Image 1 (tube, one colour):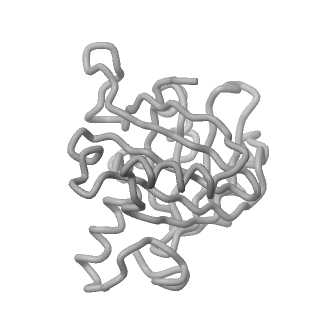
Image 2: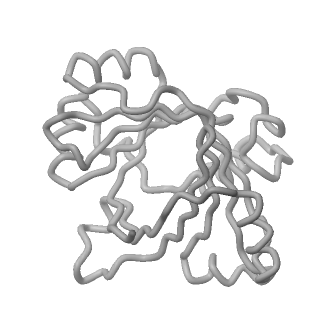
Length: 199
């Protein structure tokens, strides 16, 4: 199934306080804290990256999800300078390792791996939207995904300064962190970095 993914990301300095505020606002946990392992695939010449696309296999607990993301039509999408907007097509698969082998037979090899512990929150007022809290090896981030008016309303309710929000991917955040710290890690994993490193 394909849909437009509209989101903002923000760094969270106090995850416990942030999640307590979500409870106060009437959010409830949709999915409890779950380990997530993501592998991005690309050709040796990085053809997908050149087209601003990703091909990903995600292991979320015991579930495997395959996802393709590409750029949205700039004429029909919300403000892409304010929000991260992608067309996302994804589905669950029964056997992630076998799908990974198929990708490699087709010329797509692992290009980047990133890990996190994710907690998903939702609110009855907007069932299609959600807030996730991602604990990564380089810090904790929240993502707000949903209609733009819901995102703006939720930011206001959380007393979040919009200037602190990001549209960067975890890959971009990782590269920026490497530049700041001089780390030689090649992937955003707990094994390579430890957990959590200072942002």
